[in-house]
Image (cartoon, rainbow, N blue to C red; front, side):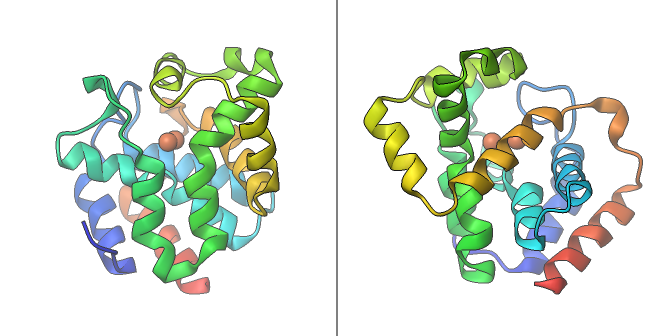
Length: 184
Ligand SMILES: [Fe+2]
Ligand SMILES: [Fe+2]
């Protein structure tokens, strides 16, 4: 898939946002909205809020194409998602998206107790995504100017899987996303 426009991204969440997030118990739209809300209430920058909203866009695309990690492969959804949005909002939005899987690997490597915060699906996909990081990989991750944003995103990502949290109608949630996109 080629780079997307903002309108196409809204359309994807409007049309397919109710798909269940693979291996979890909530929809893609609910997960995206919750992650964005956690960033909003933490007073994250608009760029990081949007990254939180869109961090699993690549997974939505893969689900549409019938390819996702439950098939036993790493879908590299973080790379797919970042590549689809980088031309629209630049690295401040795309890089935390690109790094959010590495951020999980980093957190589990540096803080083994972090493993207990992962959902079953997130724990299962960890191995497919490379598992624990080597010391050199940890260092390379820390050298990225966006690694701190990706760590924040990752912590909210873990928390954004509550079925009862999706309080808005789909239309209101998409209006929030549209307004955030326009603000950048
Ligand atoms: Fe993800
Ligand atoms: Fe996620």
